[in-house]
Amino acid sequence: MARLEQPERVALLELGRPMEYSPRSVLVHQNEPSTHVMIILAGWTKVTHSAANGYEALLALRGPGDVVGEASAVSGRPRSAMVTAIGKVEAVAIERGRFLDHLAEFPETALQLLSLIGDRTRASDRRRVEQGALGVRERLALLLLELSRTHGVGDAEGVRLTTGLSQHELAGAVGSSREAVARLLKELRERDIVRTSRRGLVIVRPDQLRRIAGGG
Image (cartoon, rainbow, N blue to C red; front, side):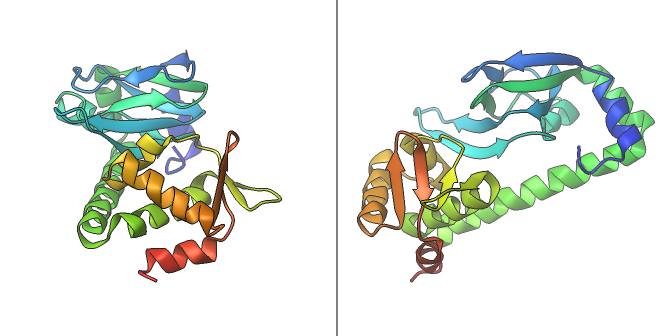
């Protein structure tokens, strides 16, 4: 939504109906037909893809101003991923037909949507390259650094991550097993690079994470 001018944002939001979701509620189901597009107004969601063998990959986090379900709405194909609320989420749901009609009427909005899809594709390509070129240790360090920038809050200990992601979800984000991620987090705790508690994960020494991410 930040890519659009104010009149375009208002026109788009007026197409939909307000929705509220409790934590762990599903906004979009994987493989379901594309019937609507969601614009997130408040709160955060996780985008995941489940393989046939049960493995679940964390693809992205989406929050205020983000659009979800746009690719399947444009292509007409079933949803490729599931979107789940991490905490309380407020959103606007726009019926697919109204959304497509709006894009035809407002070409600038359509161009910005294409730009968004392109950026997300590039980000996905970058992650695939990282998974092929880097080890799990380096990938986990990169992920924690990225989360510290996008979902980090400074406190007395360091930078506390606000996503509340589990070890299983961190593993899905770096393409590894939960056991491997648990071992790596234990190593990082023992070196006092990170600290974990019921309040979540805190990055104490980001400089050391950067060294690990660089192969150091």
